Length: 59
Image 1: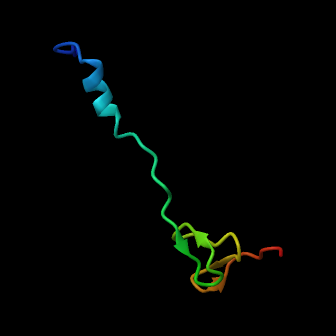
Image 2: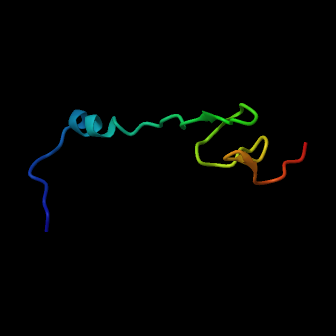
């Protein structure tokens, strides 16, 4: 079985874990209503995608 060669110190272990961070989602402006939305998705505010209405949104 695999056995560690030696004890890994807390500092070394925590340095490796320091790169687990959250990133803000990439947002683009909807060309129809200028609301910020995620790319390649239907706009939740107006229901448009690629210049045409995909879903009806109640106003």
